Image 1 (cartoon, rainbow, N blue to C red):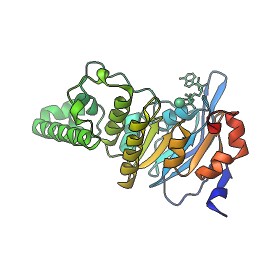
Image 2: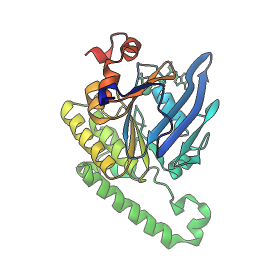
Image 3: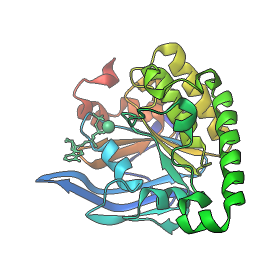
Image 4: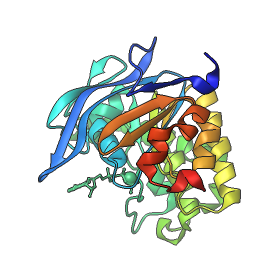
Amino acid sequence: MTDEDRITDGAVSGKSDPVLRVDGLRKAFGGLQVTDDVDLEVERGSITGLIGPNGAGKSTLFNLVSGFYEPDGGSVYVNDTEVTGREPHAVADAGLVRTFQTPRKLEGMTVREAMLVGPQHQTGESVFSIFTNRSQVLAEERANLEQAMQTLERFEIAEFADTPATELSGGQMKLVELARATMTEPDVLLLDEPVAGVNPTLANKLKGFIRDINDEGITVLLIEHDMGFIMDLADPIVVLDQGRVLVEGAPDAVRTDDRVVDAYLGGPLDE
Ligand SMILES: Nc1ncnc2c1ncn2[C@@H]1O[C@H](COP(=O)(O)OP(=O)(O)OP(=O)(O)O)[C@@H](O)[C@H]1O
Ligand SMILES: [Mg+2]
């Protein structure tokens, strides 16, 4: 079988070292079955692409996996730890972090402050420990601040550290979201449309950064409508259609598969 033929019906299971495993995940809103018995494995070290038409259920799947929505059924494992229905911070502790399609509002925060929202394992989160271990809290705050600045430098946005987050362009905000998501050093990072609305130069820069963090050991699961971007970056590609995994395979095989072309009904894949 050549690489171009590499495609299967539904998701490929039995991967050798899945960092994320989703079994029979289901979610309905009202009468609409948005996630319909989804099985998925993301191999450690991969950049896996998740594509599908508008409304296919891609963001919902991210919300279910990362603890922002509670599933109606099925299970989610991160690093072999079951995290089904657990809070986002618990899922992050298990090693999975996500970004949002529409970045959250960060009114009143500078970029530096925004970077510090959500780091895990902060002793200061426990009121009790503030009294018992003040010096440790301060040391952690210093370390977090230092890490935030190093991360901003690494993503070439240190110049915006003192800028109100709301003054950034959409593209710059996407960079901050990516930078911030790496702060907790996740094993697997879920990126929901990291280059939507971003100019080509910045999209290329983001592509480079995503490759870099993957080279450094972070597995990436990525939703994107920009077909050139995702086909270039991701392998394998998983196609979601009407809440179900349609096919999984190599980019070239997916791009030309009749079922995938039909699902898009002459949409983005024909561009
Ligand atoms: N909280 C919610 N309440 C009700 N319906 C919802 C909710 N979240 C998502 N949906 C519905 O679920 C379906 C799938 O939405 P979802 O956002 O997961 O699609 P998507 O594949 O990410 O689409 P897009 O490519 O446009 O971002 C849509 O019909 C949407 O309206
Ligand atoms: Mg979406």
